[in-house]
Length: 352
Image 1: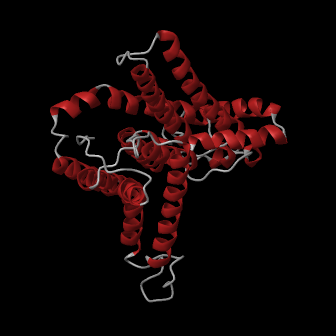
Image 2 (image 1 turned 45 degrees about the horizontal axis):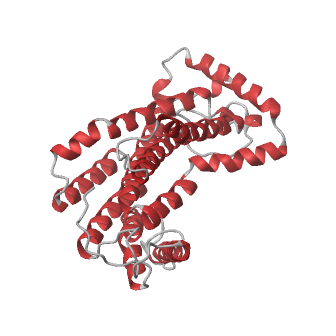
């Protein structure tokens, strides 16, 4: 290992870090002793369970199929968690293992290493889902408060297994040090602790049942995210669009994922058409916005000030992802109702 390659920005005053990196590389080399092409392909597959390519479709399906309120909460939590991770990576600027030894790279990864986004996001995602599933299961059994201990152990055991498996894939693929994983888990635990402990108290104390307060809160948080980390416009825009779209939907054309259609609970056929319609419309909107708004892929790229160097590029980027977030929580439910895939039942409004 060439220690002259160690460039860790704000952390370079910590004398012990090079030794920690050396230990981390030894751990990765030990794990990679079991490396073979089939196992590597399997690890690459399982590592996607800790990425946005998995989270985003699942969150949208929860929103469109099962529980729009849970989908909103999980979506907002994941977006904010992802922003925190991206922000800290840019602050810490920790390298990845293959920056020292390229032969360790059995997979690809971009950006800095610590804290591990896969470790953090998988913990936040799967523990939230486990808590949500436990609540649903308890309600179906009529307990409403909590499941029997064995059932809770099963649900949370599977969630923890997924978290550990995803972390192992990152070490096997040589894209994270063990310390990156530990940092990601620690940050994920802090986020979950804030969400589950003071979060419900704040929801009761603050006027979150007021639509105007909800919209202002979402806008201020998005503004804070954009101001603290100007390099990223995607996550603040998604967050703002998703939250505003949800509120407009609840006010104008309430959508309830499990509401009956012609006296029947939505079945597999309805859910399949919702899936196809929802994802197809999101994909079409993404392509259209990319072709229209300023950027390298724009149809008007050759027009002065409309390419990626345009001063309007960042604004266009924010508009693109803000509209995508808005469409998933408002446009798609409206589309479902227009196509007869959902009904506009007048059920009492829900808050965040």
